[in-house]
Image 1 (cartoon, rainbow, N blue to C red):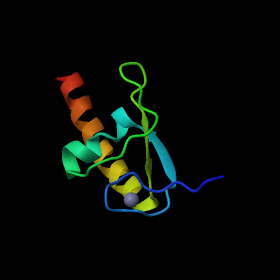
Image 2: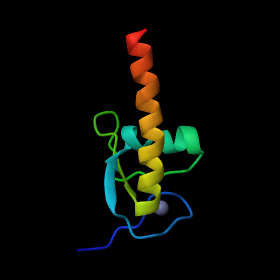
Image 3: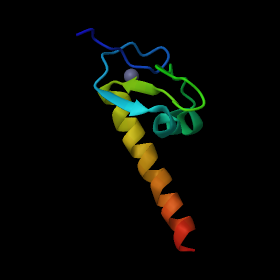
Length: 76
Ligand SMILES: [Zn+2]
């Protein structure tokens, strides 16, 4: 198996996770990172990105905040 590297531009670490691009997009929107997207075939396949452990942790933190905001909007 070919080892995948993190999709975050300038990172280059070994990837530990795979996410769909729409999910991972929060890294672009909130952290200002650039992501390399694989297997994208618009409009039906948005593609996937690979994240190293470090960027995955960052993503988890950002997406948690995102979900909190979304929940608040839904409840109000
Ligand atoms: Zn990374």
